[in-house]
Image 1 (cartoon, one colour):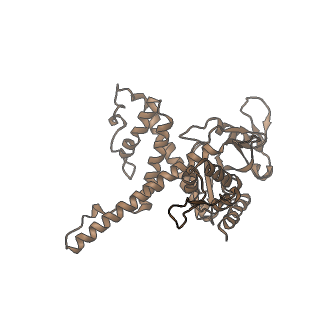
Image 2 (cartoon, helix red, strand yellow):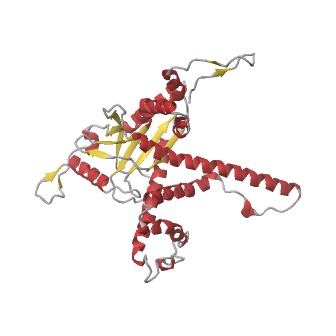
Image 3 (tube, rainbow, N blue to C red):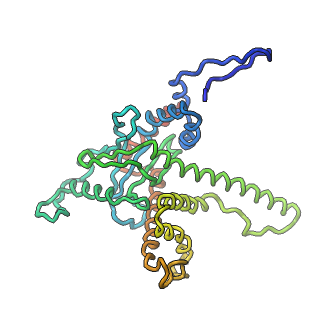
Length: 359
């Protein structure tokens, strides 16, 4: 698609006058002022191959460098609560040296003492030798193990985007394609274009559902006003739910859709994912069990998935831990918690957001 504007002359018989295209650096400058990164990646980038290159450059120059971070959780189990859990933050360091800059390298920006705390603590290594390892070694060992055991339902990390005066806060645990880990450098690398496509795709789905909810709610409220005008009763159950009440369940459904796409060829996992809704419905708000696992289709005694109920229960707990952790992180970013390096990263993102917005 040629972005050059076309101006028609006053005489209809004359051919249209095509003005010269804006230079790429001007288009990149214009796009860098776009304050909706979701729309920028999912819509503007798809206008043409030219715009794809422009948007990629905007993200390479600003968003990836100053607004994105990836946090790796070190805890094996999410114990709930709202306190900040042990994590390793990774921020942008450099691109791969190939012409296309296929990989983005993110690195833990903290000094070594920021990783190990006040001092080393001897720990016995898992290699069953008599050697001891320092607290730093223990952290790196745990990080290595968390990446090695990462799965789509439990990736052990969250991706966060913080931009535009903290008005844009996005957190998710979508895939990092072509993920590699360099323990000695405390660095990860991944296909950043594919990762951003997966990340923004889910946010775009949520925004689409929000627009649908807004439209349907307006229709319902208009209908109710008509009923009131004609002095007819309104059914309280017909009132639309407020968006904040509906959003968590929709995020959950979007995440489950992602997992179903990932495990499309795994019959057992597909059964467990499809049964999550039924398993949720088997529990009351106070924790009472309303329906046994055996009542879920396929899980009865002698049925095909009778021995797979553990998988269903594990998925349910993993989902709760992931969603609760992401919600806690969004709240924390809004409140501005974090160590000194984290706060510096937040302030740097805010400054870049002001420059991009012309403030």
